[in-house]
Amino acid sequence: MASTAPTTLRWGIVSTGWIASVFVKDLLVDPKTRDVHDVVHKVVAIGSRSVEKAQEFIDTYAAGDKSIKAYGTYEGVYSDPNVDAIYVGTPHTLHYINARDALKAKKAVLCEKPVTSNAAELRSLLAIAKENNVFFMEALWTRFQPLVKDLKKIAEGGSLGEVIMMQADLCADFGVEKLSKSHRILNPDLGGGALLDLGPYPLVWAIIALYEHPSNNGARPSVINGSMIKTPLTNVDSNTSFTLSFTPTSSSTLSAQANLTCAINVRGNDPSVTIRYRHGTIHVAAPPYCPKWFKVEYFDDKGKIVREEKRVYEYVGGGWHFQADEVARCIRDGKIESEGWGWDKSLLEMDIFDEVRRQGGYVFPKGVEQVV
Ligand SMILES: NC(=O)C1=CN([C@@H]2O[C@H](COP(=O)(O)OP(=O)(O)OC[C@H]3O[C@@H](n4cnc5c(N)ncnc54)[C@H](OP(=O)(O)O)[C@@H]3O)[C@@H](O)[C@H]2O)C=CC1
Ligand SMILES: O=C1OC[C@@H](O)[C@H](O)[C@H]1O
Image 1 (cartoon, rainbow, N blue to C red):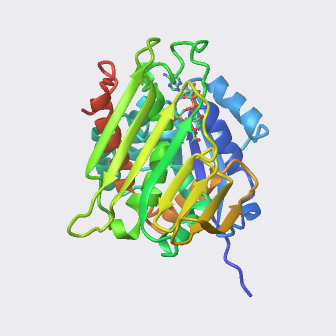
Image 2 (image 1 turned 90 degrees about the vertical axis):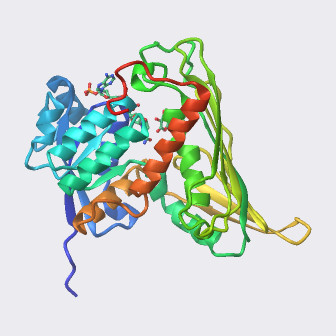
Image 3 (image 1 turned 30 degrees about the vertical axis):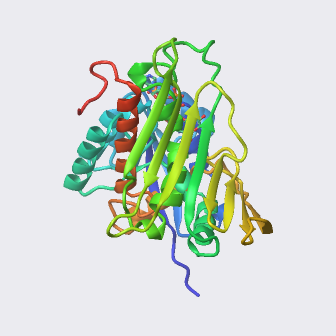
């Protein structure tokens, strides 16, 4: 039987920090190890503000592969004719400018979370992607973990009844007392604080469990309540809690609430996500960005657990490659938007973050937001 050759996606990487390093390591993992046979990835260019750093990155993470080009500017990557897709791994508040410039060069873009500093910047980027007919996606990698597909099948299959409440938490102890104030987690010029860095993960679970639930029919939450505590170090949020209430509309029957928390100065919970249905509960392991197991408890009429099921997941690599496979398939199929993490979800995220920052009094320093 004739086999079809896999589609190769050629990546250009913008920045050489921590996330760029783990993403590239994952791109270099053989997709067959995760039972992917239709797409493969090739790293062809690394862009940094320093060409020496770009070369050092290639030497360290790609075994000095001579076929990878090192650029001392990000523009070099945008204009490289061998690059199909650009991965933006700079700090939050630079995402807009980097993604905008890549899209204007007609390159597909996978942009780190949070996709932009605010919703206005994102709306501008989406208009540019549309105008240039190029693919754009926020790197919300969790949504593409194999666990999510299975969890959704159970959650939406009906055996657990309606979804009522959920909690999701991502706390991480960055040791802020000892951290430099210029570090991206504390620096307001780089969008520091818990909400923008950690908030996407509790939120992605609310989007998976509630927003995407068939009974919600794509409705947005009717009420968003947010509360922030700021660190006196730099006045960015150290702890943030936000609640989303989904209430029935003319086209949706969902009546459910998500309680979401994040903090930069305390360690997280395990399990980190609890989704509560009329007839059972789903618990998702920590960390919520790449959980390796989930557990389902089924209740009888009195709330007693009558059955439990646990599913465990293992794969080679860090888990960032699943989103890369999605990008490759979308581009191969001529799409400019992913169905799994579409533009509507990034827009909902940024609208919620704008509102939580408004309620919490988190204002970016002047000049940080490129579009207001
Ligand atoms: N999906 C995930 O699991 C994760 C996502 N992230 C996201 O990735 C982004 C980057 O985080 P992370 O890799 O931890 O950050 P790092 O500080 O480790 O790296 C950021 C890189 O961006 C480049 N850069 C360009 N301008 C600046 C600037 N003014 N200040 C600092 N760096 C700059 C630098 O590369 P160069 O000098 O080569 O140009 C730097 O190495 C964030 O938006 C974060 O939310 C982070 C961690 C995990
Ligand atoms: O995306 C992320 O996931 C893990 C966190 O520790 C990190 O700060 C964040 O950017």
